[in-house]
Length: 203
Image 1 (cartoon, one colour):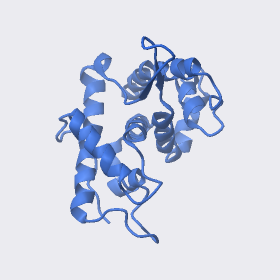
Image 2 (cartoon, rainbow, N blue to C red; image 1 turned 45 degrees about the horizontal axis):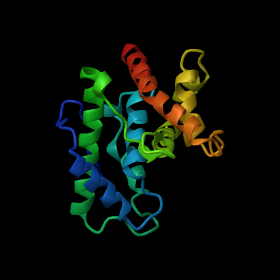
Image 3 (cartoon, helix red, strand yellow; image 1 turned 45 degrees about the vertical axis):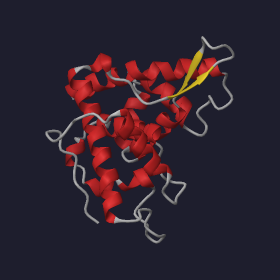
């Protein structure tokens, strides 16, 4: 099955809040537990854009798009009810991908990842939890482990990726952490992504 490739020059209109919710609902409604939610998708797309030594525009769409919804149904039934539904999800994903790259390039300090937030014990406290986002990012890492290895081991870059590994990996170390500890790790991610993007642009 053929999918479009990422084209940095194409439509980069950011998704509206309603469109993001629509995409999340479309993914949640698929008859598979392997589909990402919109938080994991956001992290996955960030990881794809940041993969060292590779331009996402050179990667065929079929190499990365189907992972978002858990595969194209071989040998299991295809997850989409119709080609029209699959096309709608694909176009929304590509637009969101374009908007992340555009935000990093043009207005990085205004970019915000899609995290979960929960209220603390009092109404004035809100905790961020980027577990799903980080898990999605690590799916992108799994597509190019050799490229990512030096980033996770590097003296300058390992601290940038540590919160993602701690939150997203099954043995990452924050599974039993307090809400405050998970919040601190989650809030470190945006600046870390911008630092990695700056490195990616120099490579």
